[in-house]
Image 1 (cartoon, rainbow, N blue to C red):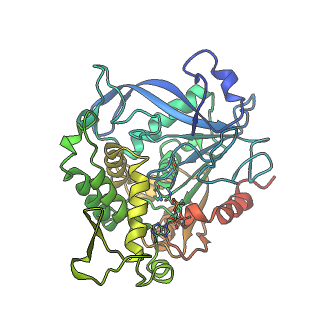
Image 2: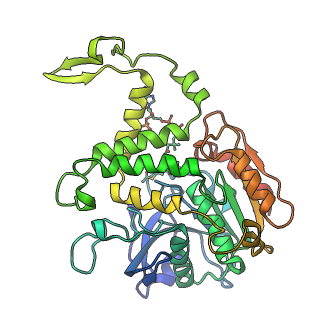
Image 3: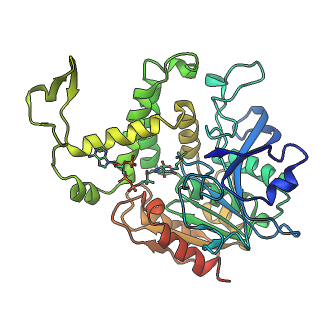
Length: 387
Ligand SMILES: CC(=O)SCCNC(=O)CCNC(=O)[C@H](O)C(C)(C)COP(=O)(O)OP(=O)(O)OC[C@H]1O[C@@H](n2cnc3c(N)ncnc32)[C@H](O)[C@@H]1OP(=O)(O)O
Ligand SMILES: N[C@@H](CCO)C(=O)O
């Protein structure tokens, strides 16, 4: 991700909105009251955009990233591919010759939006002082960003996994501002099992000796805990069948996991002798540790634990009744064992009108919503981007 020029927090924002995409921008949205109490005094929202907003402000599309995703959906004018590369751009499914596409970094994140690693008013990072935030809080912050960009209602709000939770929360909180909503590999409220997996991840970080109650920014980061959290999470993102087919019981090249102590000495240090799947998880852990802040991981994970569009709104059906004017696309990955297709069916059944759950065919599990960009694009083209 490259850093763009000044964002719309200054007077040049109207010009920025019409430029090529893929560059990180930011805008100040002022103080934000939080659902669980307390407030954040001065919030910056980071976002990227592609295409040009029309004079009526009616051609805007919001794409919501998943747990550790960033604003970088598409390469645009930058040098780095995005996480849904091929979906957004001139002539693509979400054609930036027609649509103005926005992706905002989640409140509490570490890709530009105010989060625990941001500098607070006293000149030090928030660390342990960063408040508990919910998915609903992030949606309120994103609405303020939309206000500043001049977007009164979205042509579509689209997201997968936590992005799907944010998309759905948008439709329920601001139904008058969402004309279409795509909820992919996500459900109406985090389930007991999703909360359970999340707790193990959060505890892995909190129990790292370097965590220092979240105030580790002037010392060593809790990388072991964050790496363990990613391993736990990544197992839930992939299917049992994929791991069996891809790795089986194979040993990692040059390593022998059936050996005394499963350790060998390399350059004077003990090194783990691993199965291939262990090496794979080590790699996933190392990659995340290199690009993500542990406090943000906790804040966003706990926000996702809080996800429940029905909270304070009566029954789920009563909450979703607010969305009567919104057209929905609900899609599930058929091998997803974190956000089971049955949970998408429950959401669809509770929505007003008749919504059929569309399937994304992938053997890999939950991450299929990221790897099967073509299938996601076809569903979107069919229902939301027909012209
Ligand atoms: C700033 C940012 O980058 S934000 C990025 C936004 N990202 C997201 O939103 C999601 C984060 N990403 C992901 O979750 C995943 O990377 C996905 C879902 C996108 C990728 O899934 P896949 O394409 O199926 O990749 P997969 O899980 O197979 O991992 C492949 C990696 O494992 C490595 N690998 C495979 N087998 C092994 C092994 N035995 N030992 C070590 N490494 C291994 C590969 O070399 C490859 O490494 P690389 O990613 O560094 O090139
Ligand atoms: N791989 C995705 C999965 C979360 O849904 C991420 O890290 O954001």
